[in-house]
Image 1 (tube, rainbow, N blue to C red):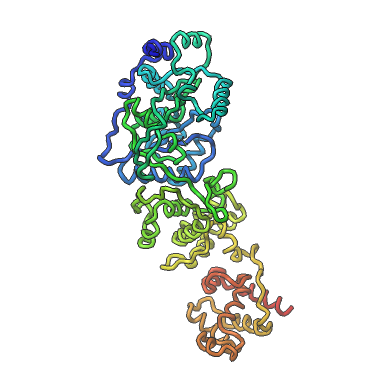
Image 2: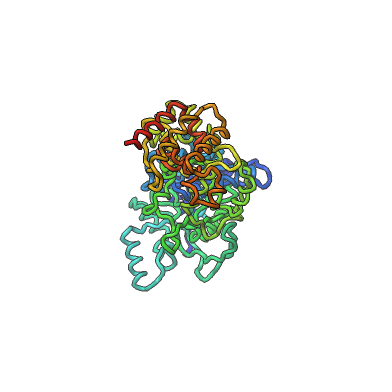
Length: 552
Ligand code: GLU
């Protein structure tokens, strides 16, 4: 049956007067250099920002900014039910925290750019122009099915073992005469606008995804919804209209959208738009026992972006880790350029794993250790105080009471070719340096039982007898060696190894005696540096306290 589409369009969209050409004129081509990529983040404001958002954002951001293009933010708020108040702000702040800065789009203070509005619910009139166009072309029609009718269709499909969905003979309103539509409208019945698909499951389409490669997909035969009963579009329709008008060249999105891609391509064709290039990113997975599974919001706290800040991973660490995961050649580049700013790395989507990436918590910690070890003292001080302010106020108070003192501590082993790697997360700072603060200092390690208390006492005594804060490192250590020798401990490690039974121990043991007294533990950073930072009074007081304890 053919229907008078002009009459239908007028009936459904009596207030739409603008033509598609007029709308397009409001969204002129972008003035960008050849090869510049225009991409976007198009998140839904659900209040939950996850690692997948960051992966997608980072991929788009690198592609746009490395090509001299534009990255914009579009808020996909078409699903009012899922929207959480304040979510847009959370989203923008969360992404900004990770250095994803947009050139254009939705901002906390409104829109920035000429291709807006950038919040989809504010674009309803635009979608209606194109919806009307599809009605005119006979490619869209209203459907007045109630929930019950849809449930009934589903039940009958189940009984017949047919595919589920609104298509073909099941599409009750696909070919209704104008009078019936008119009558339903007169009754004020709600309706959705559906796409009139001419696709068939018998047909395949060939398609090249920039990450997944060459694909063969089955055509779409469903009469999917374009506009919901409140006149707000579905994701699919909004995607086609917006990415066309906003001149998106590359759509980077999760591969959960791959099954609906044939529908999207149909829409672009029906609307007369050139489709963008697509990059469908595989999900983030993790090992669960022997098998891989997708990171889940319910089971894996590390999926939430907020987790990383709380746990004390610096932004740089997370970013660097994601690069490692996303581009297989990143680690080689980093080894060759240990101190280069990460933006110097040439990111390429071609190096992305089509199957998705494996999230590896241990690897993240390793990467983070490296990243933190390469920070300057000022940078690590800023990072840790900033973190502690929110998550460990006691630590914050200690660190900031005397910033110079704290910086001296943080400077130990920093800056050389092989910096110390003590911190994977900023929360590791406290147990590392607590002994520098008298109110936190406590002797937590014991002297190993193999050593004679009298020898330990003599070593501590001997050290204090000659300790001079002004000694340089060599003189300081020579004194310790001399004392070791005097106590029957080998001063020379080689000699000790050759004949261990000839000695009570060696100079490293003597150092350990001092370390336990001064830091309260057997493992601590370089003792010479530690003593200098603590200062002679504290060093003496702690050694004397230990001597008293040993004497009982
Ligand atoms: N709003 C969609 C989502 O959050 C966006 C997908 C896209 O980037 O096109 O999954």
